[in-house]
Length: 150
Image (cartoon, rainbow, N blue to C red; front, side, top):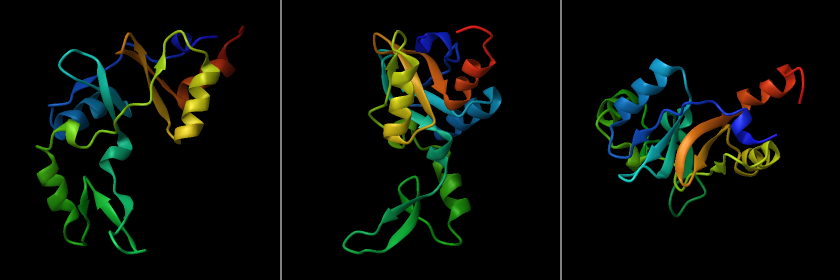
């Protein structure tokens, strides 16, 4: 079975020049957790996921200490709301994960699972000639269980 048989489509994508506010709105309106990010020629250049909008623990330079960062800024107790307010106009291209881990539509589901495990990700954009055509999420694996025939 190939990836194209279980992927979610049509794919909803976003330009690298769009704002994070636009990305968040698209994700919420469509109930999705991943947006492939495309450049001016429509080719995938990165990915924005729900986790792109949450703080991540990063090492402090020249120290063994780790602290939370959000959109590349160190968090303080009073600063979360301010960082989110300023991030509304931040470009998607500035925070996307790049390069995107992708799978071709003709590749096996096994390959998609291997990539998810290898990169510790929940979703993988599916591409055809470098352009996003769908997304495979761990949720899509449920179709394998629900299918009456494989």
